[in-house]
Length: 274
Image 1 (cartoon, one colour):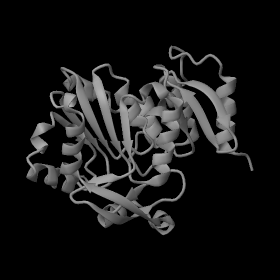
Image 2 (cartoon, rainbow, N blue to C red; image 1 turned 90 degrees about the horizontal axis):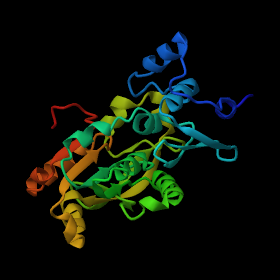
Image 3 (spheres, rainbow, N blue to C red; image 1 turned 180 degrees about the vertical axis):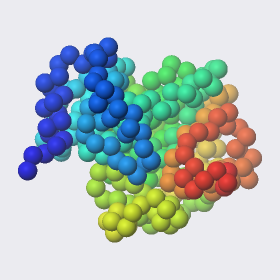
């Protein structure tokens, strides 16, 4: 059986002249825009190809051993994706997080809560006004993938501090339900799992014990360790599969929520909780 991901890599290799100005066929354009469906709709390999062309991604090579494609962004970031490429497209092709820079009038520090593979953290660090990124990812495999990205982009190591724990409303160890293959979707929120995953994916989840630390204590300690950051604009990106509500409530109770100039991310269980 033909490996569609390997076939895609060959297609990219054959398409040497990736010109954004190149006229796309109507079918390609329709396909590109139609893929902006709910998050449950995982895009096809064809949409990855088109998204990378439009984002001026440079294809580097296909790692057949790990079934991964290596790219270079137009800013020079070295990035990897496997067959789970939805976040890759959102952050580095569609540039979903570009908007926040309109709200940064001065230098800032950003807390990336739910860093996953590090795509967003690296994107944030590219901004000249960004002084530091504090990145939190409790899932071991996602954190290790993030580490590979940092090895490929050593120039960002002075800006990005990554931590293999999550932040929550209290310090504890908790059992998360994690998808064991490519996406490593994880959550300790049973309501999120019930609402967002179909029965097939629920049956595939495995348990992993993760470390969580109290949000207000983490924020206070990091800023205490780096006094020069105290005067910087403070920003938070949060995407943690339904656990965002209790973190925001805990920061509010500690009188720290108001110290963030901007908070953006996803409200998985609706805006009412906010």
